[in-house]
Image 1 (cartoon, rainbow, N blue to C red):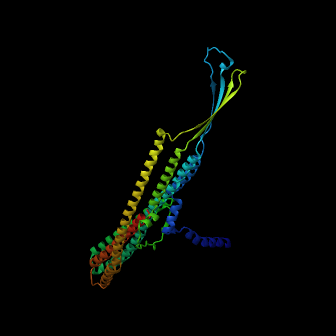
Image 2 (cartoon, one colour):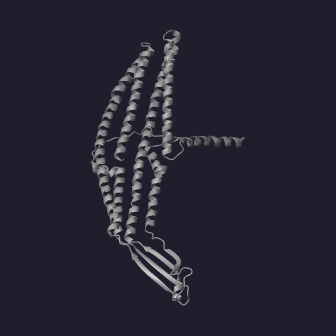
Image 3 (cartoon, rainbow, N blue to C red):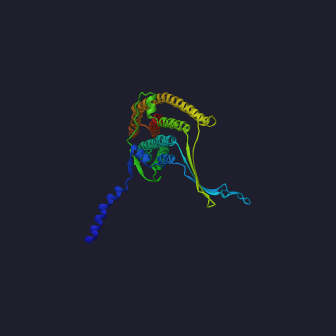
Length: 416
């Protein structure tokens, strides 16, 4: 008996721990973004591509492999008469090795290495887009949870009024239609809660996918955290330092400049060494060899126009990218100032709704509910005031979601 009591005591002690372990973890927005930065599969591909360029750059400094050949040298055709022993010909062994210019190889290596920062800048650009998507889902979840709280309060009020109507009806102090109307409004609010729960489930699935986790993995969010927006003054220089797409363009321009430097190295000659060893078929003939060194002449007019034209074309492409970058920064500066004005206007509207409109509607509802309890007004009038407050509360949350999305778009444009 004592043993059974001990077992049940252990189980009782472990139950709170088990319940605690089954609680959903709560993640803040920064924690979600950090997890996306570390675990997102799409972002991982950019790092792998950047690493691949390091090996490609090492391969660019390799020489061509030596060429080895074997054949005959000055061997007469079948049926030909041999006038002297040397007419028998020789067995020839050949060894060739190209010796490229060291300056060419180093310039090509620097050009290939410059591709890695482009991929890393592209990763930041992709991460900025994923951050915007994650923030949109996070704040959609936040607003949906706030809607659920509002709807739950409305359900409590409507349940209270329904109970009052059910109590009054037998005493002919209310109408049966009012009971049905309260039931319909109550179920309507419950359906809206179910819809918001679906929005939360979708946001959770999207965020799990971005964090490279199972879509149905449970977790919660910090429902207190809301985005903050502070207007700022900036110029094109500060935008260029903050934007990921500008960084990618700058890295592309630098890579193109290194490519031009590699093309200019094409003016330098390449070398080649050829060694031939002759083994006569007639033993009376001496063995012989031949050594030849060769050099290319890339400055010849018919070959130099190839790299000269490529260099000129690349220079024009660099100028075009610089103009495109400047135009993009100028356009973004005006767009960001316009977005600041829209956000400020939206903040004023929300502040007015929170501090003036909704408190007035709440006071009107409280007064009507008090009169309703004292049987001074009928339920339809209370429901009408309740509808006005409910609609305004939903409109406020809609406006907040629009404001949050505007802030997300602003940050995405600023750090794009």
